[in-house]
Length: 70
Image (cartoon, rainbow, N blue to C red; front, top):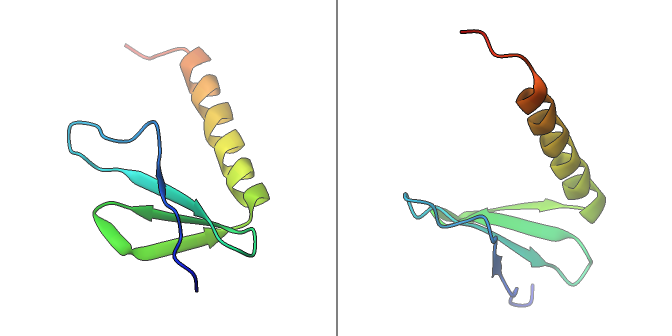
């Protein structure tokens, strides 16, 4: 497999220094890895990642609107 060009997520680099990286493979699939375990690489189709992000964003917005118990 050719060398991938990894991009660090703009949301990475919190106080713990953990970062998420993404790269596009020659076949068009996306590859994801974390800085603390760079040898573990997940592969997904762009549609799969888009669906995951949509789900996370939707749940986050729903949780922000939900009444909080004191």
